[in-house]
Length: 517
Image (cartoon, rainbow, N blue to C red):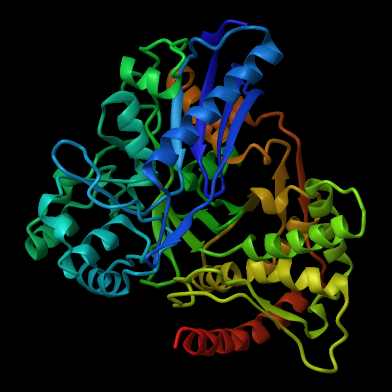
């Protein structure tokens, strides 16, 4: 294989860093990964910078091994490389690019004061996890590092600069830093002026330069090549695509960048993205971000999704091991996800709250997972699992119901991420939550890194047409898709469940008060 006819997408997810190589027919041909986990240190969710580099190198090394095993060649070059990562958060650095504090991730809910003040100032919803909220909160807190700030980056733009020396960012990732003017495809200048007047900082100088899909974002430097591949096999000079957020790669991986389309990404966190031209009121539950080409997107982002499910499945796994049963983790997930479909549409009264961390949509600064039921409710495995599957989608449903009330049109919704790996289960429960059909593509399991690879492919092979047309006519024209619609009873069951879920949130709030006292 001519490696110049391949491209590589690398995504820093919340629990895994994954690299995917695709060929010129957009087929995944090799992959590599590295598992990691965020940690709560001094009340702040973070990943260490040395973990970022170690994870990048390990992931790429495993990709090299897979390329050699499957293609029989040494990975020395490729047509293009792209970096994507979980959006938002805060990485400030000084004039010499030395980080000034630990990486503060999207999961933190410590910027409520800043988010509220900026939302009022801009007349535009600024969620707590956005970079500008973190930056302004640091200013309000009079943190020592603020006086030394020359640059503020996301994780994707941080890694991209290490590889290329270029301080740039893809427009979707940028839209999680600061509001975007979709006509100019840049940070909103009116709001930037307001922030400068408020703080003295001009975000147009502090934040990276905004690029759209298809634009060149530099090339892999010698130092960047050695960082990615310390063995020295990888050549410098490989073109790099604009670094993007995981929302963008999810949209691309599911062909959801055209007006009226949408997707739901569900893993550690979950979020829905709907491309719209409708002017929305300011809702604290709804973010306005963009597609990789700059079109407006209504986003419902939830910090909590499958972490609580994972903890329970790990518990069942421990039981199976003690009982002498041999069952792989993948098989265990598949089994228990499938069993959830046997539960009643409203889970027979069994309820759970999946909050491990704070949740912006429902205004929580922290989380304590809960499972509860009334004394006369029949506790059984099917309803138990369905309750947790539905809890994972409940906060998302609260936000999606607001979009429906606003009259936002959704022609199709695609699901991707770990929640949808088991056939039918995740699709049917999401469909019940939103009252609409949910489709999953055969490539859905590849997720974000596949979407980033497609953005690389578009940059070097497809910019003679729009990104929307390129994906429709070249990439997904013959893709296989499974579409599922929940029954009327299942939709009504979720509506009933969500009424009790809102009551459980009152218990969750009280639990936080008691446990944190």
